[in-house]
Image (cartoon, rainbow, N blue to C red; front, side, top):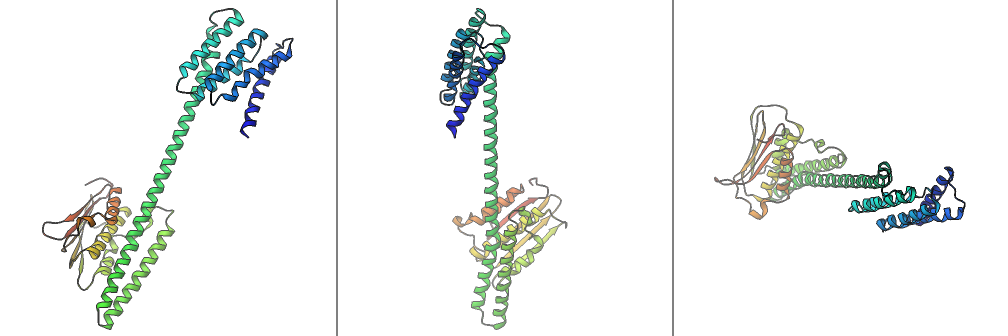
Length: 358
């Protein structure tokens, strides 16, 4: 209980002052007076948190009175501790506490030796040291609190990034597959041939299985690095086949040097193409879509170009495009999305191999 702790603190300080006096052979004839002053000089500790300077002044006055009556008494050590707590709980004006402590020390010097100013060593030890110690302890606590706030902010930032990563991956994987399923289902409704309908239903079944597998993989790898998701540029032909229909042709063209891309670049390129193609299916009337990948020593350029009418401006910056921008930004790349002069819509991403901009 807090009140019991405070009472024990006051009792401990009073007992310490009395015992130190006794151990040095300075017990006065009136023991009751020793106990009264020892308790009195310790009582201000009870209000050290709410009235730190008042507690220090009260303890200093009682200590001076005790020195006059008892002459050789160790209660001033308790007052030094109260001055230390005064600076700790009131750090904005340590100079005021230091002034009071110095004046108190000067009074002790006059009571003990009759000198106006005590010796320099006593001044440092009894007046300046408690104030400096209290101020140092307060600075240490403030720095510890600041470090804790920084750690909490960093934890919140990491949690926010994980949530964003989760939402982005769910949008990219599940959203794409559902769009492809809708496309194939619409084709199955329009077709009259049994073979074409069977093929469309098989594609729907495969897409459903792929979506379920990706969701399971995503849930299994939530505690791991995002790069644990494996789709890359090698899967683009399969992706194009899923979204190709009777009225829409998707072509994949690769140029430049061949080589193994960093996993993050490879996966980001796949997601950019996936989102761009999904947007074409959802919002465009394009009949031809071309996906170009040009790789060189600097990195990979991804371009998705269609011949359809551009989407309205209000639809251009949806969650999918924001997700593409975030993915590309994490790799220090650039992304441009918009209509082209010759007609149609273009998505272009430049992904540096080593994390440097083009």
